[in-house]
Image 1 (cartoon, rainbow, N blue to C red):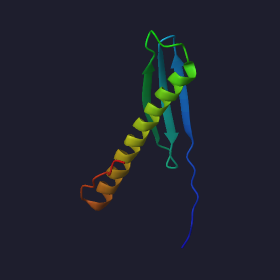
Image 2 (tube, helix red, strand yellow):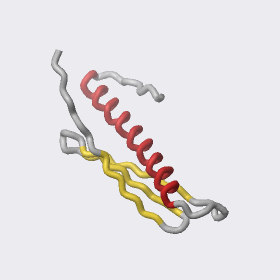
Image 3 (cartoon, rainbow, N blue to C red):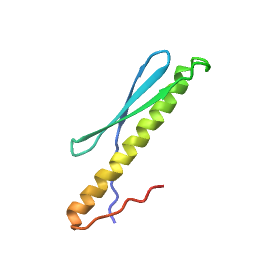
Image 4 (cartoon, one colour):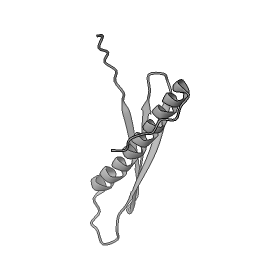
Length: 91
């Protein structure tokens, strides 16, 4: 049995103002395709200004969106190759 190591690098970018943080996650796959996802967070006006927390929330939401898109992409490829409909299992 042959083992192969493959690596993916996910890039994250953030845009912030005093009340909002927006995140974009992007992964470039070995076939050259890219998948981009977005997430956002809003600070309640009574909360202290903690940009790191906004980045963590917006980043986590972008990564969750990226995961869902990757599942949909993989199942589309399974369906295309098999001629049947596969069903993703959500964890």
